[in-house]
Image (cartoon, rainbow over all chains, first blue to last red; front, top):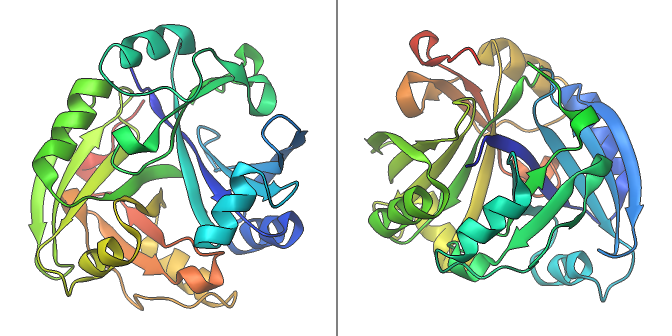
Length: 142
Length: 142
């Protein structure tokens, strides 16, 4: 069901120095910047060399957003992991039937046109887990 | 330099229920179990469907190990992210020259015969970051 790790989401206080770090230290390519008002974040996607996985940098739009609260509680660092799936609706239905609580009952809009949904970390060993059905145009064959 | 996300390392109190969760909820395939005395962990590698990335579950061998201390401080959850590289020694030299402190000056033995090295999270926005040069026999072309 999980095709691959699509991205790791990294919470940061400020997006620009984090982008600078990942591009200059690791040579990752900045491929997208977006503001997602619904999720309360400014974000940047940086692609690894083979184009199959990303680092997603997340800066909160305000302290009372999920990422803002995460930063206040735990500081900067890994926030979630996202797995690519072929069909996020089908995956949600299957996983919900296996006793894992769904944060999103239905897919919503994610980065770069993806359909995404989050699963509850309390049922997954403390790991905030995202399902990502990439936008068809964003699928890179590797 | 970073080819793709190779794995996410997940700290757990007990390996068996964590393996059961990832195999039953997500259908991941258990591909390796190892005990790494040097790192103080029992671990399991579970492969995603396309075989290019893994969930690495980590159970500490004792409380006074790095993962044991992590669990005491933060509880279960994501511990680190590992990126595949073609040449871990060359990557370490390049990254060390860019002002990032190296936890490992030289590669050491990782999961499934890989050569690995960790970078210091304090220089990487709180993200404990691992470089992974997979064992040649473990590279799956996808």
